[in-house]
Length: 160
Image 1 (cartoon, rainbow, N blue to C red):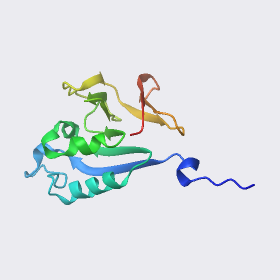
Image 2 (image 1 turned 135 degrees about the vertical axis):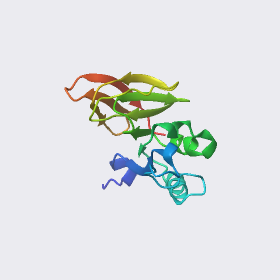
Image 3 (image 1 turned 180 degrees about the horizontal axis):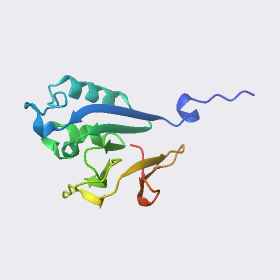
Image 4 (image 1 turned 45 degrees about the horizontal axis):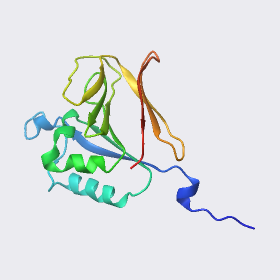
C-alpha cells in the first residue's frame, strides 16, 4: 500500500519577507533611506498581498525600523500580526518587544545606545544575534544570544 502525504504534511513551512523600511522618521529628507510606506505605497500593497496569500506555517518579517510597531493607524501592525514575528536590526542592542501579544525582536552585531519604549520586554546593551530553532508542529524557539554565546532571552513563538 502506498501512502500519500500533502506537501504541508511533509515539510516545515517558513516564509521570510523582507521590507525596505528604515529611518522612516527621516522620510522626505536628505536622510531618507527607505521607500514609501503609506497604505497607498507599492511596498505596502505588495506586503499586504503576500500576507493575504500565505496561510500556512511561520511568516517572519524582516525590516530595519523600530517604530513600525507603533504604526497602527497605517495598517502595518495588523499585517505584521497576521504573521509569526518581526525581526529588526534598527539599534545597537538586543531586544524583545511585545505589542498586543505579538513579538518583535531586534539584534545587532554592535552594542550601543538603548531605545526602550513601552513595548520593550527584554532590552540588553549587548551585541548579539538571534538563533531560531524550527521543528515541525512545534513553536519556534527564539534565542537572543550575545556574540560570546550567552543566552540573553529565550521564547517560544507559535505559527499563526
